[in-house]
Image: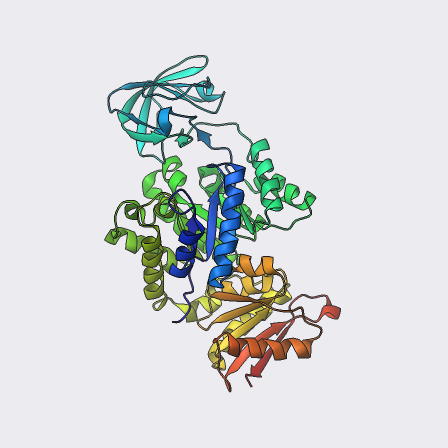
Length: 473
């Protein structure tokens, strides 16, 4: 079976917290596991990491792990028995006091809540499924009427569209989770509710101080981030996530599709990987089949150039987590046959004449058409060259080769890139010979095929500055 180009990210939760279920998810097509640090304890997530690594070993496939920092999201506290219901038309009080939540009174983890609210404003709970209207604001509480009721669980999110919430992008809790991620050797970190490029600085500094190099992904889910999208994208070359759940609450709903299209195009122009997330196959949380609209939504994100599509509650708490991955896999494979690869070579990623590696990447992808190359092989330590090649969306397979297991796992996020672990190379001649052998062994090219191989001459200090056409022996 040919390799799927679009990558699949699956969130691990109560429905999938076993090694056996993670094995099933990998075999169904998962490339990256997401652990949401807003839920569960450090001990539980340490178990998740161990199970994910064991599942990868069992399947023989290196899978990336994405740690998702909680961020400055307003959340309700504990509720009785972990789940309660709010009845439409009833009254509920939001309080900053640490109480156990009931249908009449809910605790909120933000002391500035009353000051940020005004009578008549709306409050959304549980990714917008519940809607409250504010009746009155006191010193430490806000009284509301439930306009749209439903179930709500402990620690679910709360949104105040249009309100100015003065919370840091990465608070003490987030930085402690960064330390956890470093200790657990997690492959990627996502920063929630980024509003400006500077919001990623504290996390990156914490990672570096710990002696690690975990790439950081910015989650775009606030109107302020949409306004500053280009500066954020340029600041985080590891990737951006179009997190449409909160974005669809904070922004007018009808503007979300346009925002998604613009974000994916901007990221593509700057050769930055993208994840499109939230409610992609939401109906499969309780149904074995998605809606036709959801299928079109997934396909549309792929047509717009996303690197990865993400499953959240579908795999975290859904009744059909493995089937949701299989459906995502089938949609992606069918859509990929209709993508404008030839056009993307020249008009998707921007050209930086001063960047040698970027020029080599563009030339390499272009040569797959002019010379009929069967594949591209990209040796890389950091993963940067593979990212630049992937940004041009080559139609042929791209095999990234790295001596670093961290790089192998991280490259699972890149469109069209397969990655294998290899011994470090001693010289260019040996490197090229090994790349040709790996292309044949991994099935991306056969004996006699022409392939393209990128490389870098260390003494030149230019990064990737060489491209060779090689015939597979």
